[in-house]
Image (cartoon, rainbow, N blue to C red; front, side, top):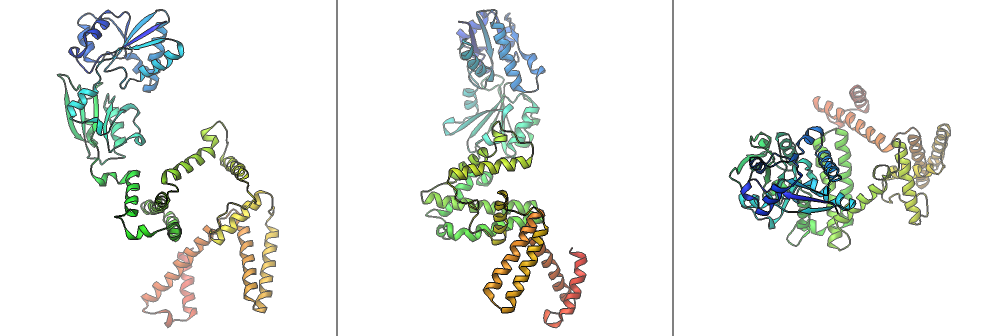
Length: 487
């Protein structure tokens, strides 16, 4: 069986190498290095060590991932004409070494034995230099592949592979999404060696630290101030649990799913208002209020032992993946219309599996009547129960208005109400035909009326008058003038 021996060059200096590792390096033929930019290599070169490094690969590729795959491919190519080769990497082969992980994976697939011979990693001297205990929670992450969603800022974070100012800048920008700009971090270089250097700096200066090389790592201390955790989802979850807990708020403790219903509606409408105002700060605040309602309902569910926010998140995540096969699977969708068609077909199959009894099933019973009429018509139209032209709708509207006037003559309030509802239903159908959302249209009219009416109030105040002092004609005169301003 062919064999690749992988050796770790240790944390920084020749004196830190074990005698066995030193002998393997001195006798290895051929010997390959991921990089010769390591203090041990400089010392071994002076002793006549010969090797081939892969530093040129870093210049050939834009992404580190491509560099690592290229190195592994070259190693297997070299092995094809030999029975054994030796490959050396900085630190420990199994700590922050993507090429070694690729070798292990592909070695198993190719039937090649990959022998890991150790080497001191930078972690032990790092823990010692920083005087931290990793048992309290510690993350070791790769600076070249740093993702905000992977970071746990309540724990120690050690970011390795911070080779240069460019990577340091990317690390800085990612951390600044979670931490204040002036949050203090430590830049540690060549820890555990005679060249050890640790610099403390505010986060915004991270990419301006002069000492950055392949022996550099960044340490981010755990967050201790509550205010910094206000962006953290688990912090929000804890706040809601506290409010509902034994020592919490009496009002929050008393709430039920039923009692919270009006608040959810109110907050949803305030979100719509913020959208219409085009005020991003206000929108962020109002979306937070909607999220509060979700969190309260989820906490009630958890308190009662039925479900938690984890179940809520699981449900919507699973649904989004299931209903977007053109994104998460191999199905194709050429445009938004096809996406909607696919979505509806998936929903239809799901409802069929749930033994849906009616096409109109799924419309919330508590939905406001205007919106509910719109949704009923949409669902009926999807199975072909719809007019193809607007003309019969206008004729139907005239018919319904005539029937209303007939009932008006008899002063039958119940029948008048029914006929007026029919008028509204036809008007909504017309809006749908012309691709107008009736809820939005009526909202715009409400806004326009409010603005014009408030203009009357303002003008009367300027003239020192009240509504009791003026005639309808006077109010109408001001109204007509306000129409120029509020279209």
